[in-house]
Image (cartoon, rainbow, N blue to C red; front, side, top):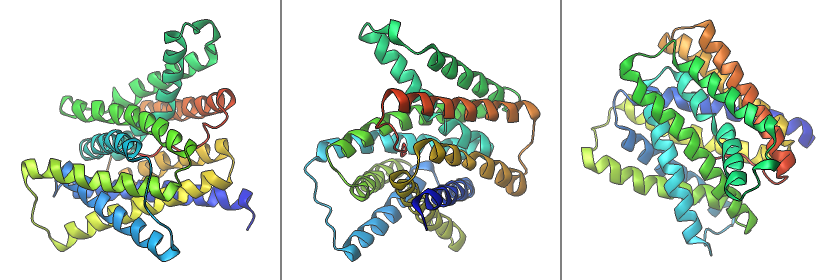
Length: 299
């Protein structure tokens, strides 16, 4: 199969698996704390990648442990906040807020230009894109959330921002020659350590067959989706991949309605459309300004 055809299929599969992972996280949240879910997600991912690397004859030694540590700290924080948001919010809302990472990246570009005194070179289309994204957030959140859900909404927004920061670190690791599997492995390892530390503060819950199955499924789905997405960005077109990545919002919306009975409002749907439009526009403008900004963010 040609790469131009293979990459879209990989991205569609990745977006579906990430949404399915969100379902597992939301169901597991009724049985486990966010720290426990993060721990098991990381443990399964590390074992999965470690076995894959061993089977292929690769190695996991790195010359950049400090860079991996920084990426893991930010990435694990983003993941923990995202998992907490999934447990507190309608599934599509939590997924959408995490997908704000492209818009946060655009905001970082604008802020960086202002700090170095190059505000006159800021693309006003990027400013409009950021504002559009946050209007979308207001529409998604305002009509559907109760007062008790606002901490989850704030966690979801912060998870998107930290995902954007993690993306910058993943890009830096790629520039020094670290292969994707090594980045994913050390992130999973960091996830395991931090998740265990957080879970120990409140204690681990006893397992049931259903609960254990949800934890394993979360790790397998997340790791497989990450591998598919990484491969798609390696062989496909950046904007096409970014467009298909947003299918995750559509899948999570369908899962939320069918499995959890989440309410449907036209205002929230309009907000999702604005966020997707702003995210795609930000990706397009960013890739024109910084050509090697074509890799996915990983959280």
